Image 1: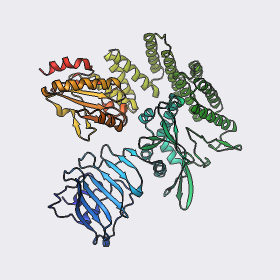
Image 2: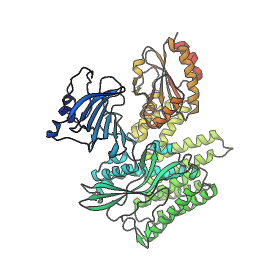
Image 3: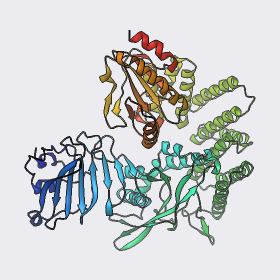
Image 4: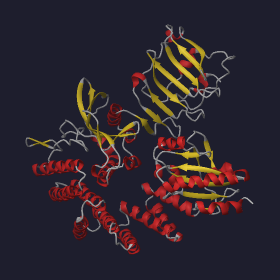
Length: 634
């Protein structure tokens, strides 16, 4: 197969067929140089038509890696097309500028399709992954703060919401940061707003115009929020007050990127960019963790036009209280600051100039009290939240904000009740389920109703009331088809109904191999959903090893599905504790595709499949395995 036959689309979706290098004639330089990177905008060296005649291509080998190498007339590297696993197919396409590798497409699972894209050398440090191998980056595995700010600028300029969302902190990443309840709640609200409003912001913004280019990263130095701050359980590295300078037609402007959080080898933004709409004063963007920029300087508003002096004063004081909350781990001080924060939010609600702003402060008010009450940092918070909810029920009972406050009041009351050491758990649980039922009836179309229905379904499933659980899961799916929880509810419904049926399970293992449960027919299989943070899961691994040793030769097989949020967490554990059976993995933890497909809600979960590929138990316990395997393998 010639190079041109597999490069016409401009995307590397098929492999180079590698002839045995020792015996094959070299492909032409022209064909090799006609190949292009999968990702656009790569600044690599491309010889002119006259220069191509003086370029050379030959096969080279270094250790076990072999490939075709293209050089210019001076012997400087232009391209390398490599076979790294000795299967006679190219799996790495490398592009150079001035003799330095600046970009490569990588086929990590050796199926002939690029699934990883790397910027190198003078081009930066980005590593993008492409799970479905369609040529589009799904996630940044590695990216620097500077490159994140450039991505934000490009997303604004091109009005590309997906490009922005790729650098936005995900829900699972937020959960894994280990921040305290209050910070997690606040950031969660920022993320939800950012996802919902970026498209509108990009269409209205006037700062990053067509043709604008990122030219500079603005920021001080990153800092670490130590574990124990505001209830956090891990150290978190952050970059506050980040900005980016852009240039268009010789003029410069500043974009507020705000706060970046370090996640693995990458960085993520946590809110919408600012200073991009006419009427906003350019300057240092606000930070979340450290120095939050004041919204009033010498009586001049630095926020949106029309913001009253009273509102500016309240917001400035609110930011000071937030800084004090970050700086203390003393419960008494946290309680005082939460009370003061609530008072300020009440004042902001009262003085808001429009319904949109009022809604924002109402939701912050409810989230603040609910999170603080459940973490023990606001003993009187539930009563205060109830008063707000009662007032809103009288004035606007059917409003979305009323439902929002109501759900957080119910959650806070339930959480606080469970903290009582003398609590009657059964009685509290019954009241909680009754409250959820009442909420669904009162606010059937609110976003939180989907959450309430899912919790009702889970409660019914755990109590053995499968029919009622199926009913509730079905309502989430039918009533909220676009909601994030709908896929998980659909999966849980599929799991509850899977006895005697085949279940969908296929994907890549941590080792990069494609696995499919359907290919295991003729064997009895246990599918084990687990994670390293789940101690009972790791105890089950000991039992599963024994079962494999006892029944492996008789037709027993195991498939692991790891639900850690980070691949490196799983691989690190398995490096120290090797497991001989395949481990399927996709990033996202309990929000990953594998968890959603069967609505995996708790770990460990084990599913037993017979030789025909049919489920015989959807929730078997490790202690039951020996007996059940003995029956199935007779």
